[in-house]
Length: 61
Image (cartoon, rainbow, N blue to C red):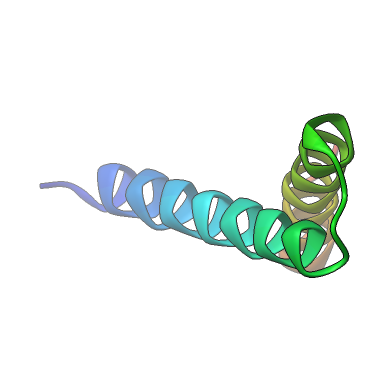
């Protein structure tokens, strides 16, 4: 396994974990399905954007 494949796998695990965290948070606040979807999307997209900004990947996404 080369380094780029490893980075892609770590990125995928990070996005999935943030999405699961957002869905669990939405369930805690008793949101409906659409609310959970919005929370998951915002968490995954926001987390990926922040990661890109921190590592200096320009343009973001």
